[in-house]
Length: 302
Image (cartoon, rainbow, N blue to C red; front, side, top):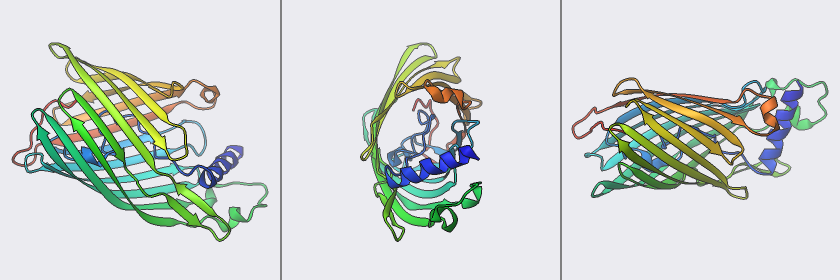
C-alpha cells in the first residue's frame, strides 16, 4: 500500500512539474523505429518486431512497456512505411499510442539519407482502483483524473551505411497540456534524440560496435546512453551499456535463422535503488523477410 501511495505521488508531481517521459528502451541498437521514423524502410526489407520491457522488477507500480512495430520498404528501398503500437503502464497511469510512419531515402554511394515523419493518437488514462488508501482526503483521489486522447506527430533524419549511422529525431513534437478546471497540467513534454554508431570489422566474422544516444527533454536534464558490443560466432551480438553512468547492464541479440532474432537486456542502478528492485529486463523478438521484388536481406548492424 505504501509503495502504491509513493508511486501515485510521484506520478502526480511529474504531471504538474516535469511532464511524462518517453519509455526507456534498451534494444534500440537493433531497431530505432520507436524513436526515429526515418528508420522505417531504411533497410530494404519487411520487418515485424515486439519488445516488452519491465523496469525495476519487484517495485509495485513500476513501468511496463509493450511495443509492436511493423515496417516495409518499397521501390527498392526508396520509400518506407511503418506502424507502431505502444502500451506504457506506470502505477495508475496507462497510456496507449498508435503511430503511422513514412520515410523517403536518398542514396549516396554506399550510404543512405532517410527522412521520415509520423503521426497518430495517444490516449492517457488512469485507473484509481489500483490505489489502496487508508484515508482519502484529496478530492482528486476519488474524483479521478480525466482521460485524454490527443493527436501527435514527429519527424527524424538518419544517415546510414553498412558500418556507421547518425540520426536525429523528435518523435512526438507536440506537448500535451490538460485543463482540469483548477490548473493546467502537462502530461507530456517534447523529447529530442541524437544518436550515432560505428561498426569495425576485425577479421573473418568478427565485428565490434560502439554507439551512443543523447536524449534531451524540454526543461529537463540531458541523458546519455553508451554501449560497446561484439558480434560473436556470426550469430550473437553481446554488449555492455551505461546510462548516465548511473545504470549499467548488458544486452544480447541472437540470430536464430536469417529471418528470426531474439533479444534480451538487463540493467541495474548503481545508487540506493539497487536495494529495492531486481533490475530492468527487456525481451524482444523480430522477424525480417524479403517479401517483394527489390527487397533484400543482408547483415544488419543497426
